[in-house]
Image (spheres, rainbow, N blue to C red):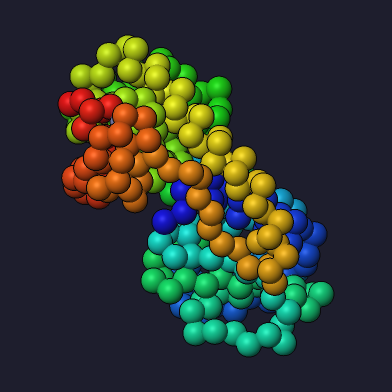
Length: 275
Ligand SMILES: [Zn+2]
């Protein structure tokens, strides 16, 4: 599942690939991906003749801006965008194609078909679902220690689950929650309202640092993605805990453990992250 740094890398890559291209028509092969408007024909008709002006991001959502519309897209588990020449064969996992007037196409592929697209008039995208329910961006002025503290004080749920749910802060998924908690020295099953002020300050800092380091890392690999036929893939930051169950903690040498927390596999260091 792509998290904020991966989505941000996709955003930057796509911006280079499709800016200023005019949409000639749109093909939809799996209508369930389109969540708004309800009529698929309305979705297709709206975009005819529209030019791609910008690509934004809110949390893990991409927002493709055209002259008049905002297309809010979530990749969920397996969604990927790629830019192709129209003569290139279309594979069976391609569910939506934006055909441009220059003979290239933006194709949305999704093996699991869990991805979503919502099309709104520009300006309505933030006041309607799914974007309207999101917490602050981790790099924005709204994400302060105070804002984090006041939200954590209201829930007894464990900190892992709280950070996954996108209402306290957006952009974190399983990888970067585990990494930020490790780097803060906080056990994933601590009750959110039990964290000390010092722990919340560390957590606030590590959420920003972990994500911004990963964004920078993505920025450095972006070229290779663009060059390979416009295919966009994933990259990863060097990780301390995620995917390292049974391996040695890079800080203290203890064996990393795995539990299920917040409904997700969670790896942590039993010595650096005491409950
Ligand atoms: Zn350790």
